[in-house]
Every structure is written in C-alpha cells, then in structure tokens.
Length: 458
Image 1: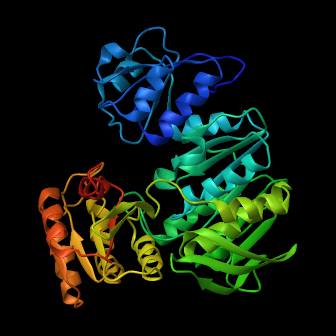
Image 2 (image 1 turned 90 degrees about the horizontal axis):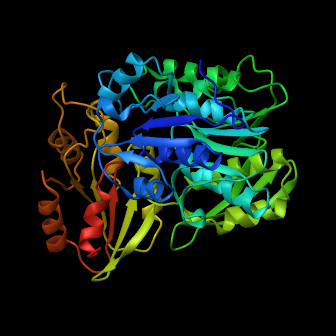
C-alpha cells in the first residue's frame, strides 16, 4: 500500500474533495506542504475554503483532471468504480487510496492518534474531547464529522502529538486506521446495505479494538449488548463507562432542567463530580463520561476536562437551535437511526413546549426498510409527525420502499402523521398547523434542515 510521509510531500488529488472528512484531510496535507487538487459535483462552502487556500477544484469529474504530475489519487465512498477520474488514475498507474486508507496513513505521523467510534454519538463526543484538548493547551490536530463553532469548521491543524478523528464502521473503514487509544460509544444494527447482521457489525468493532496496541487503551460502553464479543482477547487496558456501578465511570442522581440539560453525579476512579451539561438529553451524559474517561487516560487536568464538557454547547445539526418564529421554536438534528431519533425526541420531551412536531426525512432505502417498525415506534414519541421523501444518498430504490409505508406504520400506532412529496407542501402545512409554544424539529441526515431555514427566512 502507498504510504505518505509528512517529510516527503507530494501531489495528492482528492475525488469528492467537498466531503466533510475529505476536505479536512486535504487541509491537513496542504498545511504539511503537499500539493493538493480535487474534484466534486458542486461548489460548496468547504470547496470554496480550499480554493481560497490555493487548491484547484474541478466541478466536473473527467479523465483530463488526472494529470501526470499527480502522485496519489484519493477517493471517497461516493465514487463509483467506473468514475472517469478513477479509471484515468488506473490507466496512468497512479497509486490510489480510499479516504479511510489515507486517514490511517496520516495517523501514523502522530504519537497519540485517537479514534472515536460507535453507531451513534461520534461527532458530539469527538467535539467534547476536542474542547478538552484545546482548553488544556495541547494544540491538537482534529478531524470532526461536523462543524464545531469554536474552531470555525470541521478541522483544526495543530503541532503536537495529538490527533483526534471520528472512526466510522461503514465498509469497515476504521479497520484501516492506526489508533493508540480507541473509544467505542455503542454498537447497534446499522448500514445493513454493507453488514450482514448485528454479529457482523460486532465482529467489525472487535477487529477495530484489536488494532489498539498494548500500551494504548480501549474506552467502551460497558453496558452494551455484545460487550464480551467486542472486547475478547484484547492486549490493551479496557476502561468502561455506563449506568452500572460495575463500570469504571457511571452516573447517579440524574435530573434535567427546562431545556433538557442534564445534571448528574459522575463516579470514577478519581472520586465523585457533580456535572451539569449545556447540551440536552440523557445520551449526552454517556458521551460526556466517555470523553472524561479519555481525558483522564491522557492525563489532562480533571478541572479543565469538567469545565470543557460542562460548557460544551454542541455542534451544527445536533439538537441545533435554529431560531423562533411566531412563538414556534425550531430545532434541527442529524438523527437518522431509530436509536438516535428516540434519544433526540426524549430530550425534546424534557423541554418546555406545547406540542412537539417532528419533520423527518428518512435516509437511504435500505435503512428505511430494515428499521421500518423501529422508525415508526421512535417517531411516535412526537405529538405530530410529518414525513418527507426518502433521501437516497448513494442508493437507488430497487426494494420498493417509500415514506408512505412509514406513514402507514405510524398511523397504525395511533399517532397523527402526514406525508408530502415536496418541501413546499411541508412548509405550507407547518405554517397552517403550528402555533405559538410549539417545538418543531427537522430531523435527518439529508437536506431536511432547509425546511426550518426557509420557515425562518434564512
């Protein structure tokens, strides 16, 4: 496999350079003196940022973009095998790496690479850890799967030994990584267009954990199903967090304020700490304890870690307060799995509101079909549900599933649910039905956030 070295910069071309992760990796290499070019389907804020730094970005993926001076071509999961640029790279015998392979190569250039994994909560927990490291003046390099306000984006380039990244299990991407410390937040069924079943997923996370060296560590949810499968035969120390006194880090005395912010007592090897979060929901209690456990492992001052996690106000598209109009509060959230939807709506139910509206855009046909009943049950926590068409992402509808099928399931559970094929129809419906005191959440991993922004006149 081709290997990059920071002391030997070359010309790297990124296919799909506008992706949240790809753009961040490109910035890291650019900072290290590499020549960077790339291509994507359309201009975006991320590609414009790169162009402002001197990166040449093509907005049409054609063979002529692959010039003889390119030393390495990197491609994302969205790139098809018959892409003209990829075929041109093969024809010219230019080395190629996947996004995950390149990220793994980058990790080798740091003494303390940290990978944060799990079916849910990666971006929030990575951001919490990032805040801790920055407030402790460690000058870390960060690669986050969302936009973190304190760094003005998804990437921060530091000069220390610390490198922190999210580690996604889809297509076994994180098995190409070289972490010293790994964090596993949870392991549940997802990405069933790639994995066969939950046993296959647990096997993947086990192989990820096996990547950790003897002098590293695994920080893991001690309460999750399949814990023994994931942690068997590891040579590194295992640190657990959860809800049981048997866990290394656990909580008691949980309560919520009117904005669903949790207060709790955390018990750990260092003693007891009373913590109040600035992000909503019980799920963030676990994310916070995982981040603190990691901070303790790194030897960061406890008071800095507690201050950082308590003041953390979230990232874009994670229970993000978008604004208010006519007394209606509009929130946007990235949740696109039944567990995430349940966690977000349970947090919303803890807030002061009159009626809870959830506008949901299912993400991919395979996920919708696999979790149809679970989606219906989770969404039924809201008082009224409005469904948009399924966001296809990388898929084509070859399995005959639609949002109408999900609407029928929700209605059968006794909850009001409306389905509209266009955003305009959804917006008109909400303007007619919502009233002062209501809480409206737009939810999904696609472009559903545009509805809230349109209602707010953004």
